[in-house]
Image 1 (tube, each protein chain N blue to C red):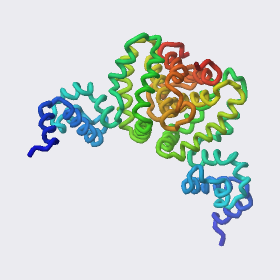
Image 2 (image 1 turned 45 degrees about the vertical axis):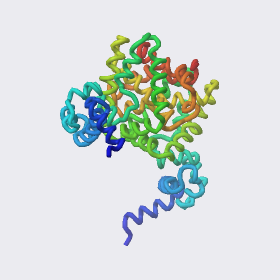
Image 3 (image 1 turned 90 degrees about the vertical axis):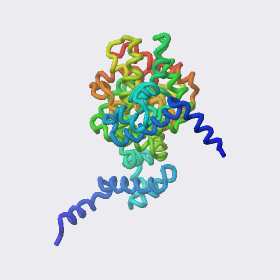
Image 4 (image 1 turned 120 degrees about the vertical axis):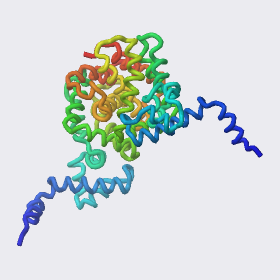
Length: 203
Length: 203
C-alpha cells in the first residue's frame, strides 16, 4: 500500500534542486545559525546538514547573508532583489522609489513581521550582525555603485535610520496618522529625506 | 547605638515630599502598571499604594504619563523638561536643537538603555500606549504650539520616525559610522530632516 504522502515524497524526490532543497537549506540554516552564531556558521556546514551541494546556497540565496535573511530574520523579500529593483532607474528618484518599495513590501507582509524583526534585532547580537551584512553587502553596495557620492557609508547608515524608524512608527508603535497614511503621502514626505541622504548635502 | 544608616533614615524622615516619596511612587507605579496595564492604572491607585498624597504625582512627574516614563520605560530624562528645553528658542533651529539634545541625553545614558526601551516597546502593548501618550501629550503638544504648521500630527509622527530610527542605528544595531560619529556631524546631517518635518513642505 502506498500513501499519498509517500507518492508526494517520490514526486518531490525527482526535484533535487527545487523547493524541497530550498526549504531543507532554510531549516538547516536556522539550526546551524542558532548553534554556531552568525559569524561561526559556514555555508559548508549548513549545506552538509541539509544534505545538499554548497553551490545550491549561492544558487538560491546568493550566499550566507541571504540565507540568514530568509531563515533567521524571515525577511519578506530577497534583499538582492530589492537592491536590484531600486538601483535600476533614475538616481534622482532613488528616495521616492526606496520609500515606495519598502512600504509596499512591509505593508503586504503585515506589521507583525516587522515587529518580530525588531524584537530579534533588539535582543540578539546575531540578528544585528546578520542584518548589518545584508544591509551593507547586499543592498548598500549595489545602490552606492549608482550614486557615487562621498561619505558613502555614513549616507547608507542615515538611510537605514530613516527606513528603520519609519517601520518602527508604522508597524510597531503605530502612531497615527503615519501608521495609516497611504503610500503616496509617505513617499512625498519621506522620499526627499532618503534622496538627500544619498545624493544631497549632508554637512 | 545609632548607625549612620539610621541617622540617614531620620534625616530623610524629615523630608516627606523628598526623594523617598519620589522613589516610593516609582516603585508603586511599576507594580500598579504591571497589574492594571497602562490604561487601567490610576494616579489615585499608585499614590495609595505608595502611601502618598496623589498631588505628589503631579508635583514630581506631571501626571500619569510622566510617572510611566520614569518607572516602566525608565527614560533618562523627564519628557516635560525635554519638551520645554527644545520648544524655547528659535523655531528655525528646532531641528538642530532636537537632534543635539536627543543624542546628548541618550549618549550619556548609554546605548543599553535605548535597547531596553526598544525591546519593551516591541514586546508590550502597554509600553507602546505609554510612549504614545508621553510623546503626544508631553512633547508634541508643547512643540507644536510653537510651530503652528498644518498637518501637525503627521509632522510629529515623521519626527518620531527619524529620531527613533537614529536611536536604533546608533544604539541598537550600531551601524558605523553613524554609531560613532560626533554629535555635530549628526546635527548637520539629521537636523535639516527634523526641521523640514516640523516646518517645511512635506507634500
